[in-house]
Length: 447
Ligand code: GDP
Image 1 (cartoon, helix red, strand yellow):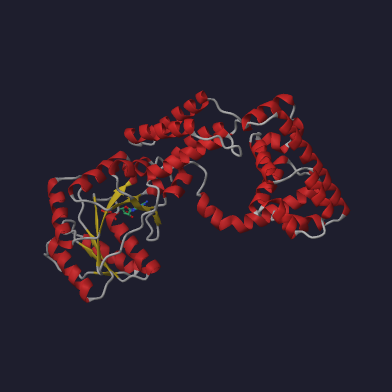
Image 2: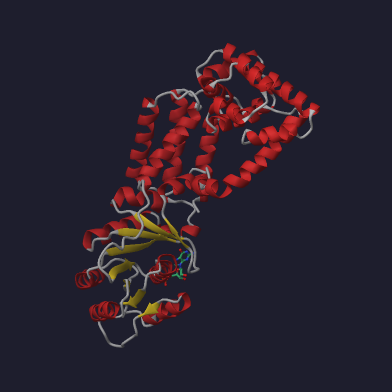
């Protein structure tokens, strides 16, 4: 999903984050590329304009944070603005009303309305233990009611028995009554669609809404139709009033224009995403996770949640091995410093490590304290990956660039390099002297 947009944006950001320092012109050039990428993704022009304006405004006013590079700062700002554009917070389906809570599904024919109705019903039953009744109010398409009944059997959700010849409003009344008498928590109305918006369709939706009094009116729109989906949502909302959007076929949407424009243009939240034809292919819409995906930074939140433990353990093993062999580079140092920070600083760690007076003294001599850690990480983050892996290539001009990139002096860079050398030597020594001992120490560092 969103591959095309992601590819373009990550190209822009790679260029930005690789540099130690950024000029205003660099940022302006990057923003031109972001603008182009958004337009190609079929994001509404007004949304693109306000997106770029917001990023520029904040980039200019951003306080210089020493521990991140300017490029990383810009990426963070873009990410923040994107999350806001997508709607900030996740907005789940609201069932906070007296039972049976009515949900009305609206949209054009073929958007995925019936499929989505069954997917939502299944989810409410499976995840929330709700009792759900579904009813198809589509009397135009001959097989529509039967289609919902088939899906209902497939997912184990009840559907209203079909009575031939009833009008949509009559079916809605019967469904409401059946839901009330049958003790259902939720009653879902799948309505008829058309190939395009027309007056009879809107009049029918208004009439159904007036009788069914739904707590949620969910517009189902096909994300592949881009800005058309957004305009459709606007029209439906103006006429019928919608409470949320479900964007379907996200699985085939490489561009993301509908997802990015929807909230800003309609003011209505995207609540769910349809991600495939299967009945469990439905996802909650989390703006921050979607922004992570679009920006090519992966679905960081869920990834971190899932992988935190195994990654930590793996890193610890690798690091211990590197230390033992004396191949402890600046990337490792940066990672280690981050861990030290996480564990409450040097003081906290030393408190957990009895009997290592010598190391403690060396670190004290090397003047590693909390503030130093922050500054050291800033210096390392101004380096290129190549430099971090091979500190030996750091000659005068590179040092100057790195110092400028993080707002420090060449002296500070030299100091860091000296400390790193000392630490690497020390680790090599300890590793040689007592095999395995260092691995244990690495564990205690939480590496
Ligand atoms: P309706 O006319 O709006 O009720 O549309 P349907 O629910 O009948 O769906 C039309 C087609 O779209 C069906 O073949 C569905 O399987 C398919 N479909 C629905 N949602 C999605 C989705 O999120 N992804 C994909 N790939 N197909 C979907």
